[in-house]
Length: 399
Image (cartoon, rainbow, N blue to C red; front, top):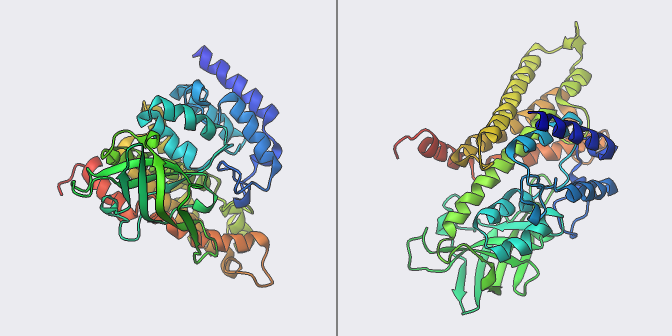
């Protein structure tokens, strides 16, 4: 216990001294660091913070030190998270590298793959994207048809993926492909890694109702992938894919918990502050009793999600609690959407600006975040898929 207390004291002192002031504020969308250099943060402090944390292994604190981590066990990891939360410190590095493919390679990658890819993820050198969904294979992912033909020392990949998040900025992709079209659909799939700069890869961004283009169509035309970047076993990629989805859903709910804990969109006033400013205060309380009750209920849901997340991390030996991540992914998406609906109720017509005069920058940003939040119940597996997983694998209900 004394050793943990000493670690907490040292961690607190180091964070207080080294975390830049701008890294203790809510993160604007253009300030995030997801790895690579194709899309840079607009805040130089983001890279100063990244370098400082990477030097200590705290971009991926629970990874082994040989791969860029700090080798923290779960008790020390929880202390680090608590001390970062104490000063509202941002994570120095986010994205699919640290939250999805990195943890999956730790479990399923061979020694060469770990040595080549994990240190570059931990340092923020490369950015990853996910090649799962296809135009005809979304919720039924195992019906995918992108082909990879075995040509001895490499595979030749042809096909199309869709909803490939931020593919236009990614350096590498982890991709599900069909390597045995005659096998049962779950048994003929392989898991490949390859560079997005490979000849034959084409990316086309998709514009959403929010005005942003976070998703893309991605096309593969005779893309050659070395056999060295086949993860696990040929035709056994579905096992890897399912494990990665658990990491993805865990990451989504953690981001949602962090966002809802702040009760703020990204910048601007918190939910309570927005209600006080726009609705007014009566006897020290938000003036509209219906809105006040709705905000109180939301904050209890948000806190419950955050506490359950923390308890699950503490109880889980591996850091990813299996099928239970579907509970967090489902509930996290709903809590996040509720938060933004309440932001709109608190602000009235000031929450519906698009580009015209009479709206502040953070109000225009909120409108787009609100629209973008609707994707939360689809991305990473739709709510309907999560409810099916919960019914079968958590509650044990019959088909």
